[in-house]
Image (cartoon, rainbow, N blue to C red; front, top):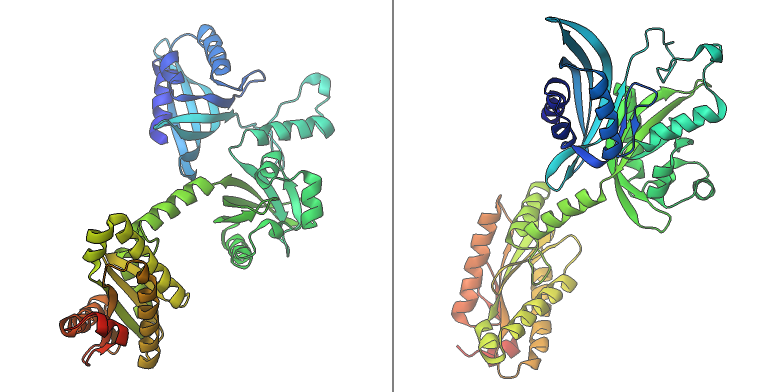
Length: 453
């Protein structure tokens, strides 16, 4: 972002190259300058302003950027604040021509960063401490500040230029509503009156129920520490759907002396969705939609670090090649999916179910170290699978399983090696059975009759 600012000011102030400067600006840019007429709602309007300025002020400038601060609002959106001093060079001397504060927002457009918002303000030397907008008033105003309808209109214009919703709540239980803008209402799908009726002006109610407790704690804790916060969470829209929001807020004191927060909120659902999809693709088997080897190892290692007990089942489909050779590869894929479905239905929610590759599957029964339960579960899976395979009468297929109950093993590799050894013993003596590591195999009667040694 800083590099983009420097390139823009080099073109605009030093080289005085209008086309080059505008190439860094979005078609939909919103720009506010320090002058009364210096507002632009798109790049074409900004071009006209810059052309008039180029005609009025000849010569080039030098400039300094100070107090630079940058904030990422989400994937592909970055904002920055800085102070800019511009110096006009005349007769070999440089004197300051403009001292401004700049807020800028840039977004990725077709792979290039471009400005979507530019706002310059000139600090007023006689601005009162509580004055928010540095405005000068004409003699005919009598020095009276704007108020009423004009003040509301100005605030609406300023808030509409921000790249997100604005919402504020009192720092009290339930976050009673302090302020909200139309962009935030559109995010939520409500009119203002509908939001008030639905929430009774308690803004905590728009937060997803599962997130409310920790979000509330995070906001209060951060406010106490620093007077500001940044948090990502889900909000519930009028239609019941969820949006992921990036919420960046600061503390303010209202006119009646109450503590409140005002925040800018950005919809980051697309970014979060992309991250989740990439994570899922990295850990999920594309065919069966259960975990792949990488995902299985990740969750099993988590379980090994968190609990002392568990049982690993390593499964292999006997004579799987016969299905592909007799009925085709689509039938083979269906058999893999059928076994994955049986495993998911047979296991608890916290168990790990995965396809390691080919016709090899794995289950980790978290917190279970009872051989009787593991044997009963494996026997049930084998019988369910054989029942499903009756639709392929020209094949003789079943499931063989190696089992290891965790003792002192600390890694997935140690458990896998023992389960693989137990599975080898089953395959060596017959098929369609199971064996605990270090013990003799047990075979199902139907499988023994179909798989003579």
